[in-house]
Length: 376
Image (cartoon, one colour):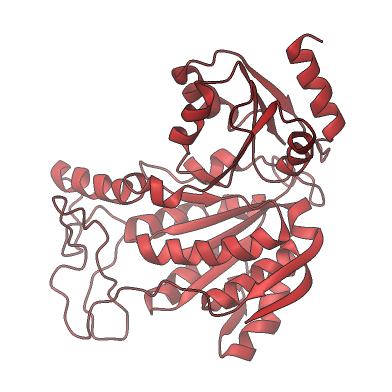
């Protein structure tokens, strides 16, 4: 069944979470993400779920981690300053392999910054904000429809790989209103659980068969398991001075994502044979789409999945283009990653058109920049 509605991006995230089976939300109000919290507070009681407003963002992510350990699909939403406070517990969720979904509706920073305007300043924080070696899944919607669709995808990925998944929106996407098709009855990923009773090896794995994601032991189901953020063995107990245990653990929590990049990474490609390629994501991609629709000699790679990085897709296009134009609403966070792989593929000319302070890219200025690149 498909229902059509006129929703903001933030409202579409909440609708997507309900459709994905989210039944617990904990959060703290912060501009420009507050509408997600407000809508979840209205929707969750209607489906037998639970909503709680916590005292801060650290408590919010701790609450959804705890609820997830009981077998529930859980989510929180925040913006940059609150996301900064969540970093320690994001690392804990990665280490304990606890599936959760985190929505970050970006605003200008650093610190409290610009609460009511857009930015893409949290891109590297989503990748490396929590300490230590790890991998992470991050997706960037560019429309209200994608806010709905990618939220469902985020829950499916979180369950499939037992990992936190981040939806990296921004103030423009979160607050714009668009037509959204709310499709019910989509295929949802169910959590693979241990059967009730004692679990001998709750963090067991098999590198040879690539079975890198162990079943989930659910609290309250007689699954006796020790859960710790410390380096732990397959039984779940700390082994902090054992380099072999640390190496096997890190290799697995990284490989379970990186070895499945072809299944995880989503991109959108237009005019792949063009000499000039625009690479962008999120809000700037909307202006870029207008440009490539009117100029068949300009290509576009829109990154939907930011992390893990779609290096193969970029290199496939970069080896056949003369130059690349990168659009970001920051001072160049994804730029270095794009440069690294584009130059490896043979494209040496990479130009950058940044926007900060809440200013948005306009199709006309993108076209002027491309004319400059062509030397016309």
